[in-house]
Amino acid sequence: MPEYAVPAPKRRRGRPPGATSTARERILAAAIDEFGDHGYDGATMRAIAARAEVDAALVHHYFGTKADLFSETIGAPFRPDLELPRILAGPRDGVGEGIVRFVLTAWDKPEVQRRGVVLMRAALGNKLTTPLLTGYLSRELVGRIARELGSADAELRASLAASQIAGLIVARYIVKLPGVAGASIDDLASRVGPAVQRYLLG
Image (tube, rainbow, N blue to C red; front, side, top):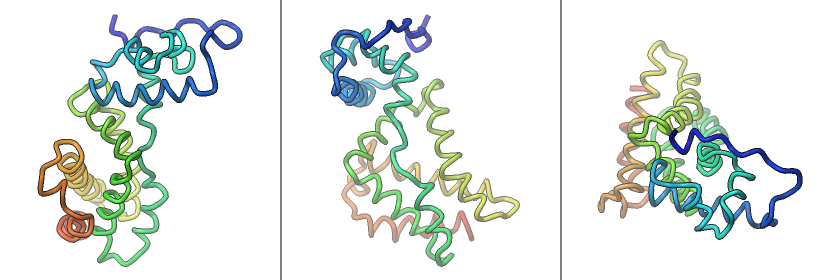
């Protein structure tokens, strides 16, 4: 049976040996590194425990299964639910550039980028974790834009815009294409923004 399907062991009363106020944070930090280095399939609970310098049982105590830990690890790398309404409520001719600028500004923050890269690397091409990425994008990005546009083909338009943004994220933060990785946010927003604008409102 694959590791992700192994049920968490029954928890004993009280905290297990080694549980401290910082153990959970160390495990979570170790999981971010392990998933980032080896992807979802390659990372193991034992390796995460070793990296965090805790007993493997403590990982299960705090997080349950590997799938549970992965979900906790990726979290929400940024909050489009807070920023998109403001962008979409502004001048319509600046929506495309505003969305690109928001995404890149968020992803340039070290902690957001670290978690986001874990999510993208683990999700791309993995049938178990791809739904985590597509669900997040569909709910927090595409869905919100589509609802605001309200047109008959709003979902297609929003999905095309999201595909442009996802490609930009991959190019800048995952494969790190030199020109894209080294460009300023202003430059990329001014160049990619019109394409996103055309998808949404063209």
